[in-house]
Amino acid sequence: MELYSYFRSSASYRVRIALALKGIAHDYVPVHLLKNEQLRPPFADIAPAKLVPLLKDGDQLLTQSLAIIEYLEETHPEPPLLPGSALDRARVRALTLDVACEIHPLNNLRVLRFLVHDLKVSEDDKNRWYRHWVETGLETVERQLAGHPATGRFCHGDTPTLADIALVPQIFNAQRLDCRLDHVPTVMRVFGECMQHDAFTSTQPSACPDAS
Amino acid sequence: MELYSYFRSSASYRVRIALALKGIAHDYVPVHLLKNEQLRPPFADIAPAKLVPLLKDGDQLLTQSLAIIEYLEETHPEPPLLPGSALDRARVRALTLDVACEIHPLNNLRVLRFLVHDLKVSEDDKNRWYRHWVETGLETVERQLAGHPATGRFCHGDTPTLADIALVPQIFNAQRLDCRLDHVPTVMRVFGECMQHDAFTSTQPSACPDAS
Image (cartoon, rainbow over the protein chains, first blue to last red):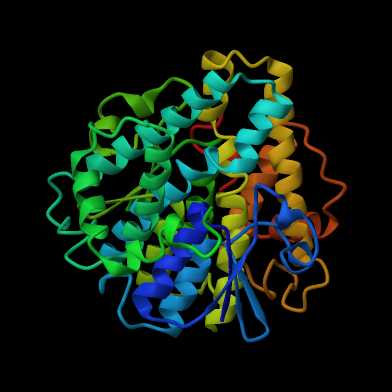
């Protein structure tokens, strides 16, 4: 397999963690978003949405980080990234989407660029926007983790799931942009637990071949 | 089951379509977003993210529309909303997330409110923002549907899948906000096909008990 990735892209980081947890060998192909390499050939020719991550499995091209990870889960079931019961899987997927639909889309590079370049929002207001969605969004995650009987060492139980895979890259972004995090102690405890795990540390932005 | 829904919420509409396609009986509980009923008890007491839709199945509360629909798919497999092979499922989920992660989160009510009330973006600029993400996002979907051998009467094959369930509510929003749609003919052909289907029409915003 080949993973097209950008070291700072949190959606790419999700797929890097999943590949590492499952021990799937792959080549790393960097696509530099700040240099707009995603908008030009050769990458733009194969990526319909001009977004990373993109996973090439044989001659198949897979897009959207969560769809890619569900595919890896189905084709490489061990170790599982989703729990055994439908109800538990619904909890893990909901936590995942609380990050992937309610926080991350508002804060990715092309959205921040549009705010500043097209809507002429000031740098201060852009940062306020960023922090607002991260801080309120993580508060929602915290409310669902704190005191819930299914929360364990990780978001759900004592092994990493899709929910941890979504959460950790979001915390990296939050820290990089100086977001408040003292109001989400359970989230941060789980983050700390993940960062003891090689699959999360060996794939972190600073450990990527294209890190700069 | 009980579905907490707002007639104009496109994430709620997704779950309404899925319940209808699977023929699952349920009660409809309206939560009026413009009146901020989602932020107050009794709804806020049971909804950690204060968002609709929320599905109550027995004493279990399920959140996040796509997690709810995957749960319905697992617990009520007929008719299937995802195709049979892992690769085809990845295609359907990626199309779904192209709407649910790249378009919809940028255009929901609380985001538009923050743009106007907190960042003081003008009404014109808010509409320009809205249309930009809808029009470019649907263009990405179009590129993946047009000419792809797996595209059939619907986004994937000749029966409705999760991808159609995500797409149709987004087109309703696009039409309500006068977005350009003539550049996405395949998307609109699929939309027309869906609107021949009772599960999509009987659950559309204007057919909801709380429509006004």
